[in-house]
Image (cartoon, rainbow, N blue to C red; front, side, top):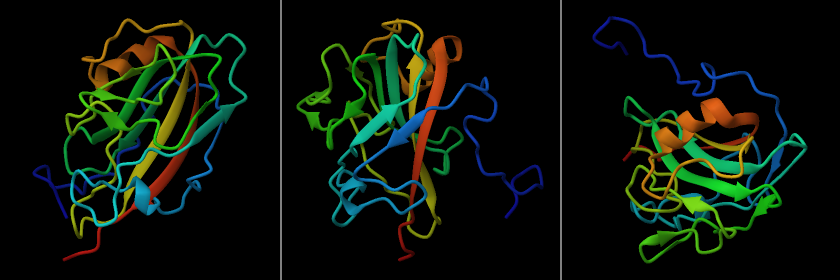
Length: 192
């Protein structure tokens, strides 16, 4: 496969060009790093059989003492778009919170994240909904990576609101992120 420049496209490594931050620990009772995404994490919104658009349970530890808040994201760098696909972005999670329960990103009415901690902001994902949207790669496109990242932040609140895009939230993290934790799962929709 070649693009109009005559070269094979390279897999996106979304954090490669960002500041090299210390790592901390991210675990889940619903996910295993490197394994396939569970059925509940697949997208009902996009019609994936059995999908529930259910965000996974996440727990984190070992972050810097100077952490003032957290941002949680889920990103698919393998989506067939120039910008990948943001499945979930939650900012301004208080530093005292070190876990999110299963389905914390549920969309209730026009607001996302009914089970998110007080003060946290659910941003619109790339499907246009304010919460978590599950995996739904095109049939036959091959495996996609779903990278969950928790970023420790050096301010209690980023200057963002629910209308701020995931890209702009992450731009703020360029200046305020002090450490990161990752957990990645994969999913491939079988060819028709």
